[in-house]
Image (cartoon, rainbow, N blue to C red; front, side, top):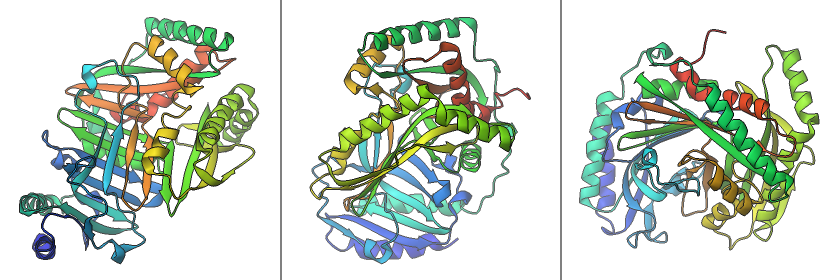
Amino acid sequence: MNFPKKIERILTEYLKINQWDLKSIVIPINLPIKKICISNFRNKDEKVLYWEKPSSEYSFLAISSLILASSNKYDPSNILHNWGEFSDLPIPLIIKTKKFPINKNSKIWNDFNDVDYIPNLVILQSHAKTYLIANFFNISDYEKIVAMLDLISENGNETKNLFLEKAELEKADVTNEEDFIDWENNINEYLKHIRNENVKKAVLSKFVCNQIKSFDLDIVITSLSKKYKDCYIFVLFEKDSIFFGASPEKLFSLKDKLLETEALAGSIARGSNKTLDDKLASELLKDNKNLAEHKNVVDYITENLEGFVDTIEIDIMPRIKKLNNIQHLWTPIKAHIKDSVSIDELVNQLYPTSAICGYPKKAALKIISETEKYDRGLYSGLIGWYNQIDEADFCVAIRSGLIKNISLYAFAGCGIVRGSDAESEYQETKLKLKPILSLFNHENSN
């Protein structure tokens, strides 16, 4: 392939202009992102994020960290770019990751931090068109990008044989009696706080851990994007760790002052046929326990947006959001934010959501901190991107797993409200673990 030389020529021209300013240059390229072997970019010295919204036909691979967005060197008003030539293309200038705000200093999460950073290189695909976004200051940054381009040109035409059966766990069973007893005790503790009116809702989570024989990162991405088209697909790797998932929960997106968010809480299984599936959905729409849990999330969002928006649109009744193996109560919310409101302010107002924390938030966080004995880390954390023209897209990192060395950790949680039952909530966690564990031949044939 000779496309790197063409790109080098374009970037060289920009390098000559305003040497110390940040340059963010978009270049169309003829390279489908699915043909790039994502795992080839895993480097223990670099941050890498793969991000995809299959239903929107939008994905990108952000490679390496050029600079922290908090650095004095980065001035959002002083960027040389050609974005105006691609006005309909969402540009992910800054990558943001944020852990769940209870830190128990667990070693399994020590490769990740809360960070906002500008990547060196982004390979972006939108509606079957592919673009390269190069971010650089000077000649050394430029040379690093050229080296990455050479790597892309070497493996860009490689086609991989995608067989999910290549990856497997050593153990098939991830539950035991002790596991359920701990779960039941924790739920009883939560219910005591609810009865005492310390909190209306608190989210209890758990994890399972197994040793992993082998896995293929490209298989993981391909499988998740095929099965969970209405979710956010993400793979974040750094040092010895890979965090990945298919999250159905949008924190918010922003474009032209229009904020889109959602309440996603209340769950039931999918049916084996359309008649049963519709029957289960109807039951969910009438279930007082799930409706109460969902209302808490809606109330949390509307209360926290008050004073930050000019108008807000919310459906009176929730809808059903159907995923591959589970269906949820879902209420989309749209609002026009005030001109003075920043993306950081919106993140601070809306995260952590009551869907993964509880309601009221401060009381729920205290209960979670006292009850859960492990560190959630990036599970139920925040992952996404934004830019200096107030475009953004963030998800809450649920339905996720962590691979560290030879261990696979899979996470799931449930909202506990008045009327919650330990056994039914336990079964719900099995449904929520399925997107991750099914990637590794965990499931039995039945």
